[in-house]
Amino acid sequence: MSFYWIKTHSLIKKLFSRYVWDFPNTKNKVYLTFDDGPTPEITEWVLEQLDLHNAKATFFCIGKNIEAYPSIFEKLIQKKHSIGNHTFNHLNGWETTTDDYNANVSLCENSIKKHKNEGGNSDSRIFRPPYGKIKPTQAKNLKNLGYEIIMWDVLSADFDQTITKERCLKNVVSNIKPGSIIVFHDSVKAFKNLEYALPKALDYLDKNGFQCEAI
Image 1 (cartoon, rainbow, N blue to C red):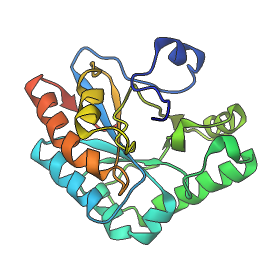
Image 2: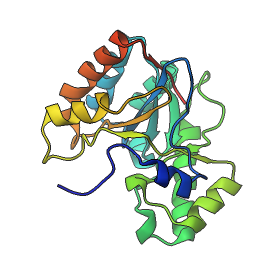
Image 3: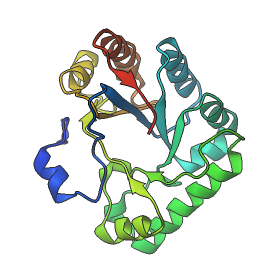
């Protein structure tokens, strides 16, 4: 299995305090996020699950997918979910020059604005780096442009095809606390685990008095 943090350590949060890792609160609010869409059928299935629980979420979209599936993207807006920028081509910041990275973010921003309907968030100024990998210079430039860089507190690891669907669910429900930012992926690669874990995670959140809100 690849190495990654399921629950973000407090030391990491302190070392990278310029990024948003969670939103601590006393009202049992948590923040479901979905990366890598929109994806045909899968994103729409996610929307159906959220509707069943009156849950709102945040979708960090890839620009090329917005361009390929604009009608699915527009459904996210219509249902009042928040939209975040996830670069146009799902770039690894550690392997990309700062100029190329920031230009790719701008391309994604343009796609978001082009396909947004009335009633969506007025300006997409939340950003999540693909793979969680971003250079300090890239982050500084994005912050200067007004972006909040949203990381996570709880990682489902639904993308990891070496783990079981039960493990994926446990990654979420064992680590949630008020204010947690939880990462799922509305992608083909993740769907085997997502299809099992998301409905059960939503049931768990309901039964334990958590409220799912958009960022």
